[in-house]
Image 1 (cartoon, rainbow, N blue to C red):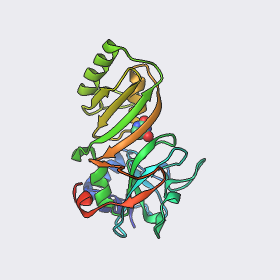
Image 2: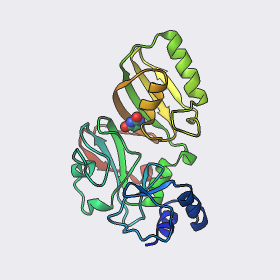
Image 3: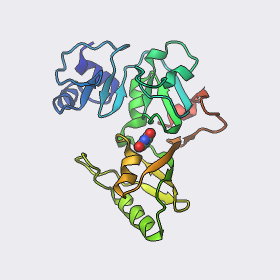
Image 4: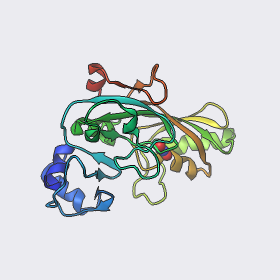
Length: 234
Ligand code: URA
């Protein structure tokens, strides 16, 4: 399938809008920037990404929640670590795509599906679905530092290398080294970079929920299909 057609099938973009994001160098195919919409992509084997999110066209309708353990990569092609789909026992694993990747050392709620348009609704900042992260910090933050960070995060901060500030987000401190950050977007390494902005380092990171869907009774490494109600919530 042509790349521009693939993008418009996998997102809410028209073919014309797809060409614009291609020209803006926002699309990668197998980690290489591609600007030419006429390039052919293999839907099952090529990894097409739009500003960090994997795109896919619907080939079935599976909607899965996985409790991602540490030590697994959110990618289609393993590099250093085993990949998260190895944890899921369903057929045609290669057609599953991930909504909002987690780093190798991050644990928590990961949603996978083979319904591209639905996945895009889950991750697109336009739809503002909340992702709740629980984090541990290397350096304790006292009351003043906490108040400053809460206020800045609520307004949005400009992270190194970005052109636009982060969307307004909620930061809550549990104590001086533990916090909860609620985001409605998913920039690359966003939580770690946001805490880095305040001169701190995240030592543990866990995603507790996405769009209100929590891990419930799942154990690390376990998965379940989402309910119809959960699917319709996005
Ligand atoms: N932000 C990060 O920095 N890492 C993740 O895994 C998820 C969000």
